[in-house]
Amino acid sequence: MSPRQKKFIWFLGGIFFISGCAYPPVRVEKEILPGQIIERMNARRLEVQSFQGRAQLEVKWNEARYVLPEMIYYQKPDRLRLETLGFLGLPITILTYDQQEVFFYLPLYRQGYQGRVSLEEFLSPELKKLGWKGEDFLEGLFSQTLLASGYQIVSLEKLSSRGKEGNYLLEMVYLPEGYKQKIQVKVPPYIILRNEIYDQKENLVMVWESSDWIEEGGKWFARKTVLDWKKENLRLAFSYQSWKINPIFSSRIFEIQLSSGEEIITLEKIPNLLEFLGGQW
Image (cartoon, rainbow, N blue to C red; front, side, top):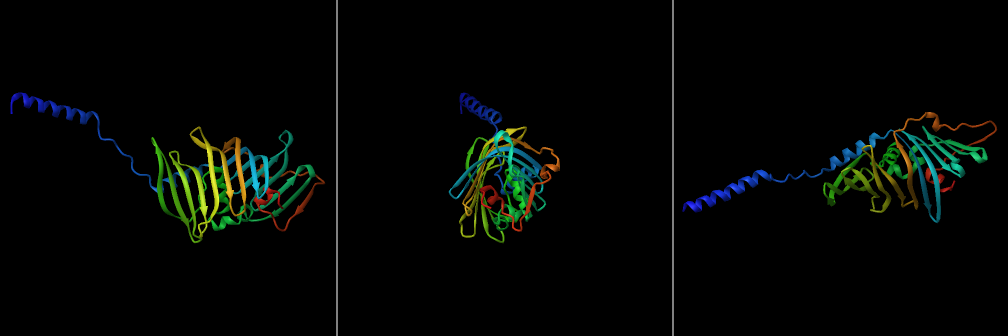
């Protein structure tokens, strides 16, 4: 080998050596595990202790359709107040739930209805079959992270990716009823885009969708959420104009102050929330 050839080989070797130092191997992130997604979504769910928001609520039930301006107040574990607003933003109906006590008040008529019912029965009889406690459902509704307990992870599929973000489809089954839940999650920031629930016969029971996500102060919030109960033929669409996560308000917000002479009617059977919202009670 001539001296010129040796110099050329050393020159090439130097280039490869320098190139190897300047451009280290690309590090590939570890695959996302189902448990990681569940853990992050649970953390998000547990962050929310209370909620206050103003929303346009679109209710579609069978052939009927209503658009209702609502003020919403929620406090863990089971306190809820819904005000349907009328002219000048004054409430025309007020509904409260607090420790199995339901109160429905019509200020214009100076009339109220009260009774007792479990939170599961008040929200929807389907909740028990889905493995949800009423408190868990409210918590998931206002943290925008609907997850039930008692699930078993079936599969995790990556649907798409863009840069560091990816959309995943997480499938879980709930025992002993055998209901399935298919959740489309955006990672990061671990937010639910769509949640489908199927019964044992693979019939679609409920769809939850969230969109128009915005980040404020490191927290994500979906300005539009849709809850579609297929069996009840009911669709609820919340479009939020304002909201507060973990506001501090007095527990008296969940009490209705009555004046003397107002009529209070005690009901033996309390309509569920869907019947209240749909006006069918």
